[in-house]
Amino acid sequence: MKRSPPAVDIDHQPGHYIRRLHQISVGIFLQELGEIGITPVQYAALQTVANHPGIDQRTLARTIALDASTTGGVVDRLEARGWLQRKTSPEDRRARQLALTDAGVQLLGEAVPAMLGAQDLILGPLNERQRDQFMKLLRLLVDTNNEHSRAPSEAMK
Image (cartoon, rainbow, N blue to C red):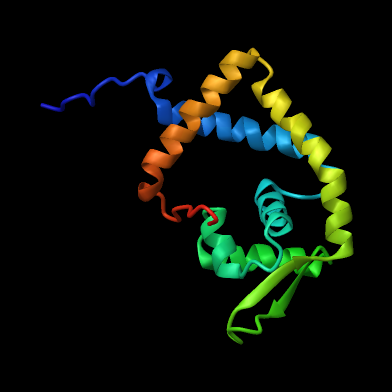
């Protein structure tokens, strides 16, 4: 006799809603920044380099929670578009330090207002208190479960 699989309502599963929110977040980001031509991961890389000039590629990967090969591809594309440059580290010739080009600085200047608008759209249904609580809970879930990621994030020191 065949048994039926257990009935599980996916609308009560946090993973399902997290995946859906990610889809929505990316959709809104691309809607708001589509003309600029940058993806959320590329934005994260550029903003992190802007915040930490001279960061090396490995540290960038750990900071934005990407594996090294994916980060290499992101950096390759950003460099090809003229927004980022690699320099050999004076301390370690194997390491590549990253810096924004003038075009990268200009791009971020255009991207940041649109990105902030995207964030406002994502959180639009929430009032200020709910936004604060949501962000606290989101950080708690991400920080507590970071070790389960394929590419755990390491905060900059």
